[in-house]
Image (cartoon, rainbow, N blue to C red; front, side, top):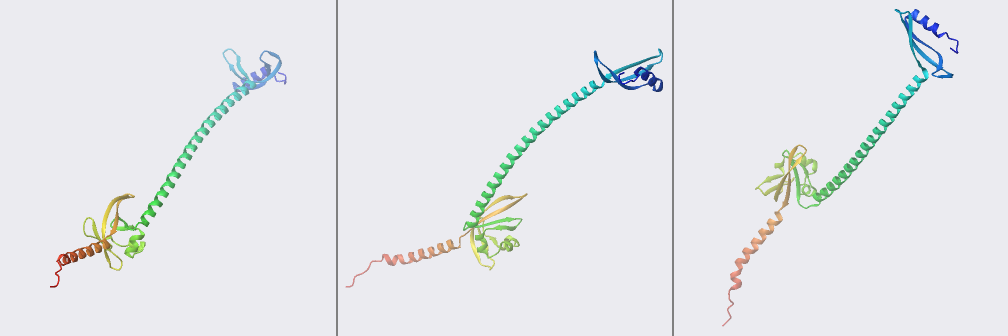
Length: 236
């Protein structure tokens, strides 16, 4: 070849030494007599005939095929990367939308909770939440009426502060031992995995005293009514 390698001698020496193998050399590029390119051949001896059989490939063809495969792999990698990026973008967008919804829900929940807290704290009626037979929450109005702090109330059994009289009436027992008649309304609420009770307590002591006073006034009026209707006699 142009580099001075006696390639057919190389083929014969390789087959004699190893029986088969590879060798590289320079060879005319296909039908172009003016171009020489590197080539790699595999040769093997055929003993029955004493022949050497070989086949070769141009290195440039191998490099071109490798480049073509590399381009395809790169193109596939780019396409896969684009798809993954689009999927990640979609997932991120959905996650952002869900995060916005969660934030809005939490904001609305906090606002609703704050409104409810202000409503409960501002009402003149006593609100008591009971779980497992023990108070877990009381609004300021009820705490002031009982004379207990919130921490003290949590350590007391329910019967120490509330004594049922009927389905709708109960007696409220303060820290000092003073009692007050209250109108009782209750409802069940889920608290975690348990069921609690929320009591609404309306003090009817003043109302009861007013009714008693009214009854006394009516009785006195009924007693004095005959005297008011008796005719007045003139003097002779």
